[in-house]
Structures are given as C-alpha cells and as structure tokens.
Image (tube, rainbow, N blue to C red):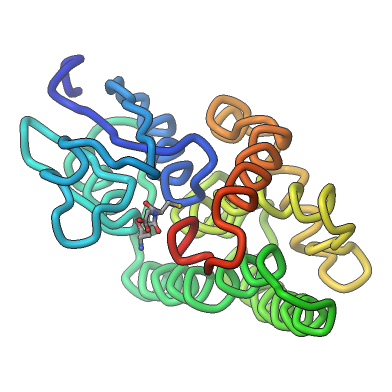
Length: 236
Ligand SMILES: N[C@@H](CCC(=O)N[C@@H](CS)C(=O)NCC(=O)O)C(=O)O
C-alpha cells in the first residue's frame, strides 16, 4: 500500500472523471493526498503534471503523473493488484466488454447529458435528452449481459464499469433537480434503475460522491462565469 504523501490526486470534487478515480482508490483501500484544483486558474502543479490536456484527474505516484481517468483506474488496479478487490474482470472477454462499454459511457452517454445542461434552446435540450435516453437504453442492454443476473455490472460487487457509469450518477441527480429530467427511469430501464439504487448504497458511493447540491452550485457558478461558452472546460 502506498505511504501517505507518495500518492497525490489532483481533482475537482464534482468531476465524474475524478469521482471514478477516488472510487477506485476507496475500493482498494489506498490512502492518498487529495488536492482540489481551481480549473479557472489552473495552478503550476496541474500544468506541470498534465501539460498536454491540463485536466483533472491526475494521479501522482512517487512523483510520476498519470492522467486520463480510465487509464488511472486501470493503473490503480494493476499496481495494487494484491490489495483489495480486483476492479477489472479477470476473464479477458468480460474485461474487453467492460472496457468497450466504459468507452461507450464516456463517448456517447456523457456528452449527451452534458449537452442537456448547456443547450441553448429547449429544442436542443430535447434532442440531448433523446440522445441521453438512447445511450441509457444501450447501457440497459449492456447491464443485462455484463451483470449475468447479479446486482452490479461486474456481478456480485462493484467493478470497472460500475465505477465508470456510477461516477456520472451525481450529475443525473443534478439534471433532475435543475431541469426535471429523469435519466434512469424505472419504466424504460428497470435493470439500471435497480442498479442505481444498489450502487448508491455502497460504501464506495457514500464515501466519495458529494451531495447533489455541490454539483448544482458548481454548475450555477459555471453558468454565470461562462455565459455563452461551451461545456468543453467542464466535462469534456
Ligand atoms: N478524458 C479525461 C477528461 C477529464 C476532464 O475533462 N476533466 C475536466 C473536469 S470534469 C477538466 O479538467 N477540465 C478542465 C479543462 O478542460 O480545461 C479523463 O477521463 O480524465
């Protein structure tokens, strides 16, 4: 296990990308120093650690920075393979499926719901809601296949795909609160609706995910500071 101080995480509390990394570290029971970043000013440490994208999360392990949340979660799983539960499935086919659906969740689902928040017109918002629900429909099917009848994407307990999709649930709540949009609706996605409930009750979610009001406040602040700008700096 990493000693305190040799593992640092540069993050933003409400970022789904950061949340999934914190969940991975929580699952493994690994201690780390968390350093919240101001993405409006971007400090020296972030610029130096992730000079290509200057985005969070960045994990700094013994002075070596690792960026991109999916790469970080896989890194954590490999480096601390002997600590805590495995995050990626052991079976190569299941592992490939989890990676494929994780890529889908980030490339299709996430931009769709981010689009709901930043839509310029009601028409555009309705389009983004449709895109989001279509992606949820795909993930409902994926859940059926991956979970094999169990409670989580990974089976009996939380794994890679649970973290990748689960890290976005905070914002689903925020979307409901701010725009009245129900992303995972029991009639359309019964398996995912049951999973959302189960996932929310895990220690992983309880210890890592902030209160929905934190997300709402952050978005409200962004909206006022970036009127007319795109979402690129928040979540892409
Ligand atoms: N693909 C990246 C995305 C990370 C990302 O977009 N982070 C946002 C916060 S949610 C960020 O740092 N934005 C700052 C910027 O775009 O300048 C990952 O998976 O880590």
